[in-house]
Image (cartoon, rainbow, N blue to C red; front, side, top):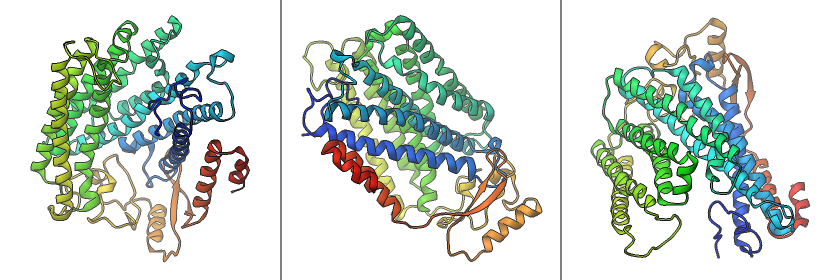
Length: 479
């Protein structure tokens, strides 16, 4: 048997009465391990960006992509901690008989929904914000000019990260919450479009005033902008309470979140793959196959998902595997099916392109796109260590605006050169101040060790104790 309570695991469906046995317990175990791993990754990313930047890379000179990763990591800490608590409470209800989610004895079934969606809606932005970082990295390179509105984009990213935690109730407008609460979250659901709009207009302005080169990464950027704007407009629509009552749990919502997640995440990921694969493999992807991939994927997506807006209005519900004929839904579902096959064909072409290119593709020269950021400053194939001599940053676009990456004041330059010459037998890293990125110390990075494995075994043991017997919690804690 497999867990069958849905990815959201609403109670009481996921409780011991309606989901007996171990399948959902294993689901919660896997979820808990993933949550702990995500929180640890968030801490790692924050430390790396705040205290381990290249010398001279002040906060005002950080690439937008680094800002996006930093904001995402902070969001992960809060969102995944909430989900970790929720999954722990549910497992306690299931295994030792607590009643957190049982309204018959003072618990609340809505408590699970609140805890889940406090994670669930920020999780959308945890996916989306790094994708916007890809877009902000790619657009300047292919329009041959710096990004317009750098400071406004940073403010928009921070605002998006904060506001993402003030939207979760719009997933619960049909649960009978007080009107005052629903009014607040409806307003927040509409206002979140403002920071997203700032980024969209900044990208469009940069493209307008630049000289666009329409290579495959840039095509996917344009596909992202068009598709995400449509998804954003439908998102504002479902943020209005009466409208949400009409389309909740219908195919309109399916269309909306696919426009947001595929339009806002998958399109940027494909753009980033075409952009960065030469850095990873030293091979260029085939441009002609890339264009076929884009057009099939773009056309197929809109053919598949745009009709769902209409079928949702006509009453097509979510989460059903069949429906009665003669309801006026057949033609729209058939069109969506055709679109899905077109999408699949586009993805197949990408896979063919990828596996062919990494074997026989054109060799990539150093910085093949003429990019501005530090990751493109090494030879290809890139050495495992990146830079033997740490770069010293003076601008936001070091590869465009600096004659050399190794110019700085005498003490800093001497330190960087000395580091490059050390015959170290251990891994060293440099820490910098949080604001100005001034070097503070050289510290020894821990090498291969058994302790991460021991810690992982201990964590898994403690989570497994939820499923089998609480007595082995002691063993997990000792490990």
